[in-house]
Length: 165
Ligand code: SAH
Image (tube, rainbow, N blue to C red; front, side):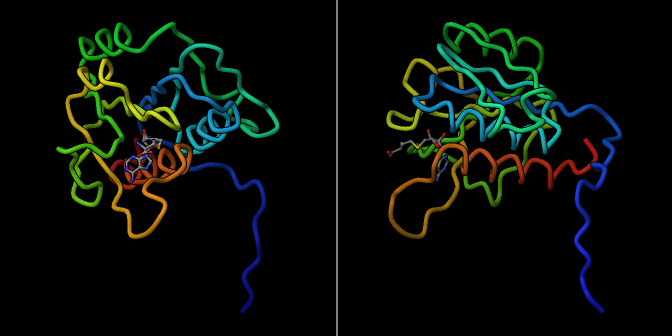
């Protein structure tokens, strides 16, 4: 028996629309943003919210560049406030003094996953809007993941908890 690779297999159908959104603090790198958009597309995330001069690189985001809606804002707090009013739980993916471990964390279906800047992480004015903070255990150096890697790990865990939406 051999394993036969299947290329471009049609994606798994969700039974209900994904209620996970991703919100990025202003990022330094459009490569990271584009990697996040690609992972978001694969995970069925309908919308990525970002700030500033964000621009998606199609070669990196691939079909995510077309399938994921990119919403660009001046800053995150007003957007997070509005989403919280719409019933979203605002979850910061960040290493903080009170972060919960991703291994135990139970996501709410309606979640905004907030990602930090490559250098500064999630700044204080955005931290104020977080309902929860979750971190990925680190076992070696450097002290943190690349932001797009961390985003993919967290989106994977959300999808594991809500495999059909
Ligand atoms: N605060 C980091 C730099 C940020 S890493 C430092 O100490 O230098 C960029 C972003 O990736 C973070 O803001 C966070 O959103 C995410 N990230 C990276 N590693 C993470 C981890 N182990 N747990 C949770 N989020 C992480």
